[in-house]
Amino acid sequence: MKERCSTFSLRKLPLTLLKLVITAAFLLANALPAMAQTGVRVKGVVTSEADGSPLIGVNVVQRGTTNGVVTDIDGNYELTVPQGAQLDFSYVGFFNQQITVAAGRTSYNVILREDSQSLEEVVVIGYGTVRKSDLTGAVSSIKSEELQKLPMTSIDQGIQGRAAGVQVTNTSGAPGGQVSIRVRGGNSLSSSNEPLYVIDGFPISAGSMAQGTNNSSLANNAMATINPNDIESIEILKDASAAAIYGSRGANGVVLITTKRGKTGKVKVTYDGYAGTQKIAKTLDFMNGEEYATMSNVAAANAGLAPIYGGANDRWKEPSYYRNNDTDWQNLIFRDALTHSHQVGINGGSDNTQYAITGNFFSQEGIVLNSDFNRGSLRANFDSKVSEWVKVESSLTASRTFSNVTTSESDGSGSGVINGAIAIPPTMPVYNEDGSFTTLNQTPYGVTSANPYSLALLAKDQSTIDRVLANISV
Image (cartoon, rainbow, N blue to C red):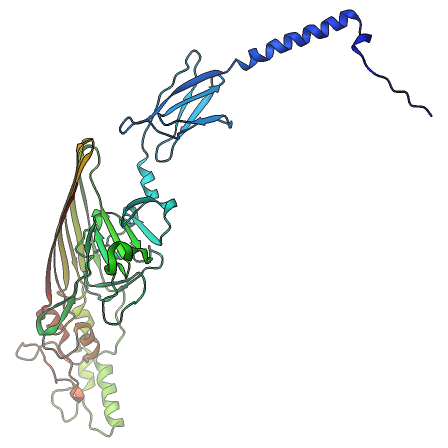
């Protein structure tokens, strides 16, 4: 079987058809450039609203396509798009903006406004600030929004549970009492393991023990002197690189605290306040007076001794006497405690000068009778741009804290108010017959338990701390 192969040649076309093909090809060749020229060549300059400076590297993209360019070193761009197309302008740290290409217009100058929320992507470190994506060290960051979710006495309560790898432990239940913070674990057996605190660039070491009467000790909480509402951010430097900045003081980690500063705009006067109560969630369940007296007599009988209650000792009555004559010591020393805070702030400024001034008073009663913590603070931050190349920043923080803790004992016997309320029998009265407080060695078996109610009322372990931090930089 033979295959027949046929070929096509322009020579076999009729002359009229050949002319039509050549004419159509010529018209199509002239139509393609005309179609390509239906787009509009738009251009312009992209600048910042804050200072009018050109923005380099702004993305200018036709919406829905990959057709786009970036601005040059002078903020210029140039792009060919169809009429009616939408252009998207986007840049890190600024709000996105869109324009529509209108007929007869080819120049579009665009002004982008800064996005203040982009500051969340910046982390304060020892040398200054860096973008969080560029940060290589171990840093935990806490912003002011997280600190202001719940009322707190001091900002260490805001760190607790919000910074990974940072251990926060309350070493005292007193209002404003010391809090132990461990960033890099326990590195020393004899020296302090507390981190170094840096407030607006000013290094502060954790306070030592303040010796009160009879060698009692009230620990100084370095964080309690700072108003939590003044904090803009907290950065915790965990790794060994902190020691390269702050030396041996940063061996246990560094807590960087940055306070709020003024912002350009109209003067804003704000008030922030709250009030609340605290109470003990649950007291220990003890025997009442009659039950205690009965069990004491049983214990005495098992030991071969005479009954304590209703026996030869005239001081202690029959167990039935204490059915309605016992003492609930926990109820005496615990109370519903009031907490309240009041703050007035002034914030504002011009393009060249910004200021932020805040005054605060905080008061917290302890749930133990006669214990309290009070703090008054004043903060003033000023920023001034003297010229194009000179800027002055100043910070002033002044605070006074005064507190009273009633958990120590004035006579040095070693038992505190709470421990005394647990150890003292419910059969012991609060007052003697002459109206004086009952004292030691009046309990069965010679148990030496002080009167916790008298300690709560009379024992004083007071502390007053004045702190002024001021710095200026040019």
